[in-house]
Length: 113
Length: 112
Image (cartoon, rainbow over all chains, first blue to last red; front, side, top):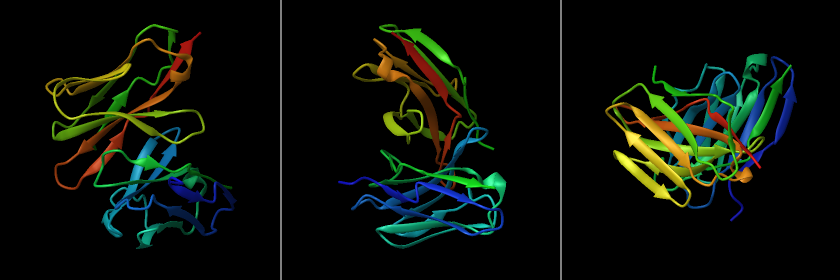
């Protein structure tokens, strides 16, 4: 199995631009999680899906952030407009059956100038 | 706000020693606890989970949970240089909406 796939791996953009991060979970996994990691705040859960349905988005910092999961094999996290404080590593993770044994993707390193 | 506290370290131990990593959490409603390992520049990977009071052993790793003291720890026996990484404690809060909260991690260095 290829594991969780994220793209792009690195993204540099200017303040105000739209950023779209992509994730392909492991086949057969029914949970998908989006996280953000910074030095100051550590790893934070942003949103998670079960069977493509968003369950809890209380971790999404602002209305500038949105996430979708149109099918079992694809999810996006969009930031519009982006701001320098959004600079972080964004991880996608998937699991089968719940919170146990989440498999993380390699992450997208985002820099907003 | 749910809090998960870890000593950021760095924690340095000689090769072959026992490394002890500690974590405290703020909400008694939590029921599931996880330890993740994260190598520099890499993604986190789950190494241990624990759900009930006491010890849980897996190879060189032992997780310890004390719900009365709201304390969870990870012991690494016979530490190896390959254990050098940041260890993240995560607590699943299951009162109301489920959510997983992470500590900021403890950086461990095993000195050959």
